[in-house]
Image 1 (spheres, rainbow, N blue to C red):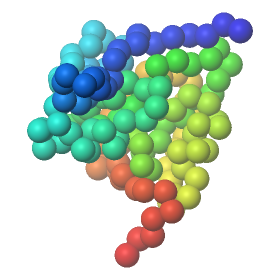
Image 2: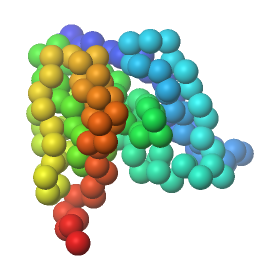
Image 3: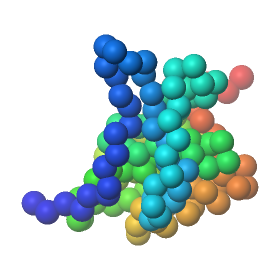
Length: 140
C-alpha cells in the first residue's frame, strides 16, 4: 500500500536529562517550517501539550494551536475540525469521527487536501469560530 508522507518533525522530547518541550510550527504546512520550542516553564506549555493530536505536527496561528497530519494514505478522506478537543486537519473518516464523537456542536467538513483544510482552519481562527471542547463536556 502506498502512502503520502508530510515532512516529519519531532513534536515532543522526553529524556531523563532534559525537561519536556513541544515544537510548534508557525508556518503554513506548505511552507518552510518556522519552529518555536515551548518548554515546561512557558505559560502556553500545558495548552500546547493538550492541543497536540497523535501523528500530527502542531501548528500555531494567532495564538491558536491546530494539528496537521504527518501521514495521509492515498485514498483517505481529509476533514477539517474547528470545534473539538483537537483543532485542525484530520486524515480519514474514522479519525474525524473519533475527534467529534461526544462533542456537542462539533464542526467538521470534508476537504480535498491538507492545504485547503489548513486554509479553512485559519479562516475560522480569523473569524473567531474556533472552539476547544472536551468530549462529553456539557455547556453550562
